[in-house]
Image 1 (cartoon, rainbow, N blue to C red):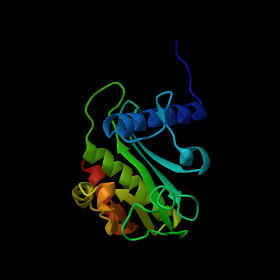
Image 2: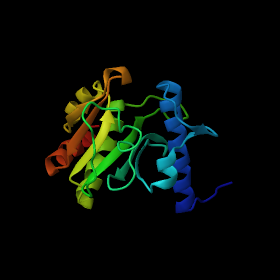
Image 3: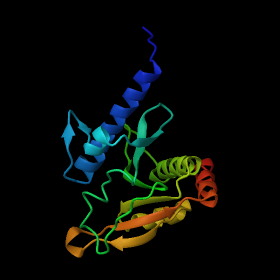
Length: 193
């Protein structure tokens, strides 16, 4: 029997699949200490901070990647969870600088291979386009140094503004300039697929 999904049902389905994918990436694969309930990774920011999500779907409509953005004038992970994580204090509260968190590429539930490069290109292209359209000038995020190579290949690299204390692991806090050139480079990468 055929059924019809309303737009709201489709959005709820994609949202739940994204949260389940985040659980597989952050808890299962990366072994982060994250809160997972009913197979979904959800944190305080999802429930209370009114974030914006960018989601990449495969040809079957399944979530293969996602990220979350929040304005830095509200509560952010940098201001709270990462407040003492970095050697140089990061205190950004600017309406034109937004924080990106929970960036991840995950395999679809039905199996199959996913190109991390292609999904990352699509997610970052969407982020850059959203930022341009919204008057956002910078994106700030925490990332592992190994990701810098991917960012360079994609054509949108951050400027590292601080590194973590050695005993807290190896992470960077970076600032991405939102420019039309970056959007063009990312768009070119997504059209090359």
